[in-house]
Amino acid sequence: MDQFIKRGYNPKSVISLVLGILSLVIPFFGLLLGMVAVVVANSVLRNNNAGYGADNGLAMAGKICGVLTTLFYALLLLYYVLYF
Image (tube, rainbow, N blue to C red; front, side, top):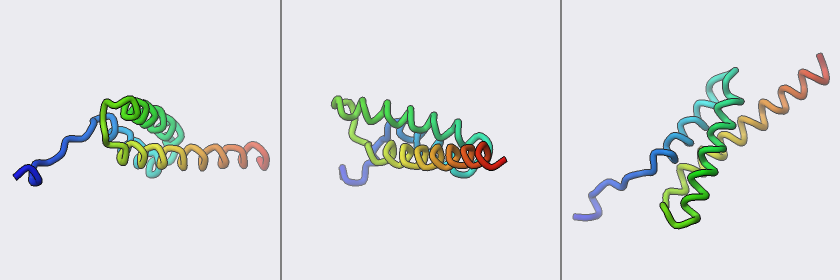
């Protein structure tokens, strides 16, 4: 019966994932959302490594989305600065 009980997730992990996905979708605020997703994910991963939780998957996915978006917008900004 225990196998049918839904596992609870850390709310910060879910927030990190949602912000990471939104950073990929929302054009102009993506850079800010990506940075916030990385900060929240690092907080969750740091707490999980200290033994306070075990859902690293959602936080890691949010961190990856946030890092990819931040790098994309940084390169886009560098392109605009150099060529315009």
